[in-house]
Image (cartoon, rainbow over all chains, first blue to last red; front, side):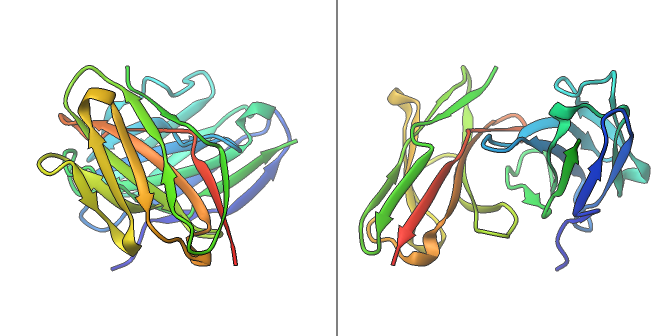
Length: 114
Length: 113
């Protein structure tokens, strides 16, 4: 079974530039998550989708971050404009249902903002 | 709001030593509890989980964890570690109503050969 795919793996940009990350979840997984993991910290949930609807985006900085999940499958997370403090690994995860509890993570996209 | 606290940021031990990582959580309702592991260069993966029933749960690679409801704790243990257990370990809590997970800050474990 293919895992969660993310791209790009690494991205370096200057502050105030924009960046987009892409995620393809495991086939059939209805729930998709984006987490932000800053160096030395645990992952922090940014947004959770159930199919193509947003379940929770309470911790998403909406003035600069946006995310969408097209047709309930792939998802894109965008940052515009980026700040230095956005340097982190952006993790995408998916799960079969909301209540199973087991998340399957991708390898992450490491963002460095200079 | 949920919160998770992991007691140690770094642990260094020798092969065959016993390992115990502490995890405490704060949440007012029924919880599901997890330990995830991230080996060097790999993605996060599930080590074990507790939903209900026997509070002592066993996971992969000889790990186990005990849920103590009165202490809001879910500590991870392994009687005898191997060099391959070098990794970062994350405790996570989810509400029983849905699987939004809140993660602790992680504990980096280094096992010396």
